[in-house]
Length: 354
Image (cartoon, rainbow, N blue to C red; front, top):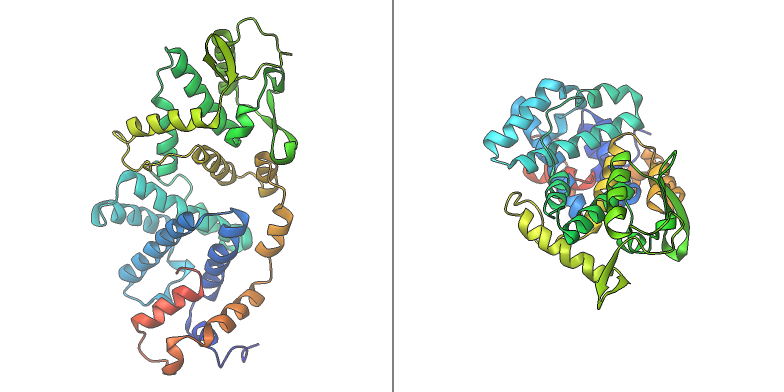
């Protein structure tokens, strides 16, 4: 075992790293978990890498050490609070960016605790941490506040966003919802039809049910709970027509322009998928099992993802070593002396931070 990869740069790095478990989990998190478990986009991966990389660089600076010497034992509540202050005061990050950085770090530590129970104490350090609202939360909050609920169109648009977030549904799934698909008695649920018209039932929050009942009073005052009418519609020439995705994009764009006056972090082109993505993130961060999150969202391939996510760590490490060894610049310098910038950059690349 000790001789594995001795001729490769990755193997030599493993011999120099003090906390091997940290870097193994970094690799798993960025190379397996985020892209496969969470279906993270390249933009999201870059954002999470930036957050964790900034934290590792902070630990290096505060402890006057190299990246090879960074370990879990340096993480405690005081360090996390100091890091939050560092982001705000020295890095001049906005409140939303500070929150996003801390939320990403918390997500990584939660992943570590789930992979190795002995690391749970580091995740517990984040409990109650003063994490300012992240950009995703800010976007959802500010967007939902823009429509005027006292106008007909404003009430419709506001409720559409509330339902979109609460269900975590795709836009076309919400647009196909009929009144008979919504059950408000006992345990409130809504039936959605996903890809291939596959049905699934999703629970509704009581707050959402309250908004729904007010919406019905205004838009469907004469319909019964068994009605086949679409919940959302537009009116042309005095007739109801099912609302379209273009209608949704139009009012989202308008809300986004207004919301950016208060929250500059909201993206230029607000996409309705932001609500689905945020809901999925919040369900998982709130402790919901990934299988349930998958069912909630109507995904069909979680089991395949789980196989890759929980593949043997050692096998993955060896694969990374083999893939990187032939091109590693450190092959030309077998000295284990002073660590250089290229050493640390290659280490980050090996373990998913680049």
